[in-house]
Length: 364
Image (cartoon, rainbow, N blue to C red; front, side):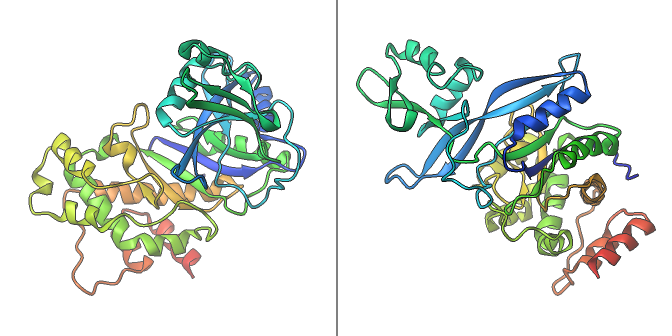
């Protein structure tokens, strides 16, 4: 058993077998816990091929599993980066749809005002009430909604073929008994014959509250910038995984400026916000820096899909060691020409001899 003294949340991208969906996994989790399943709208974005509209924003159907005390156990949601396993020419599954808009602000309004349990024919009616218009039937069973000038507000559209099969399994925040909780969820997924998607990844969110100081964040950025490639090699990052990449050099320049470590956290945040960061990179700092509500985390996005809990928690434990090293007051010593391989990093981390040996063996 791997002990992790850190609050974490885990997201594992899975694929339901043909004929099943992410709802099947949500129902299985609910049955195990005598719980219930709540259908909700999960926001997603994807590149657009429409001229002048680079991004389409989506609300897709997700399923939250609640226990008898109405506490969240897990969520099963879509992930639009999972594409290559699906046969798009298959007909849409009855009752499954998404809501699309070119304005993210409108989708946030729809997410708050519309009821995800409603049908595609009626889901946009409350939004039409806000604009004084009615949804109208479009081609292919789509329901469109315009404002009174005819400008498009949103479209509810049937899902492309097999779009119900992708399942990002999101755990509730885990503070203890990490392995017991995670293995229970993955065991159900395996029993239902869920598999790893071609583009799949595992993401781990680490509570960032202890890391919100200029010293800690500078140390962390320095470590991950220096050893990021070695960590990706060690972890076996999926080469088909989308939305990964390095931070801009401007982040390194910012944390390396002579006065950065003397700043208090609000001042450091203000400085960091000037860097054009995105969540779609190897290590996501956006939630920590921008005060994203209820998500003060640092996210590691380079892990492949593992269907066994042990591998995931071993990786989590290694990154906890990196976070603990970042909390040490002294900066990482990096003279010019210092080796950037994984052996050098492991020697610098607060790991037990057994942990260090295990990772060195995996590297070989």
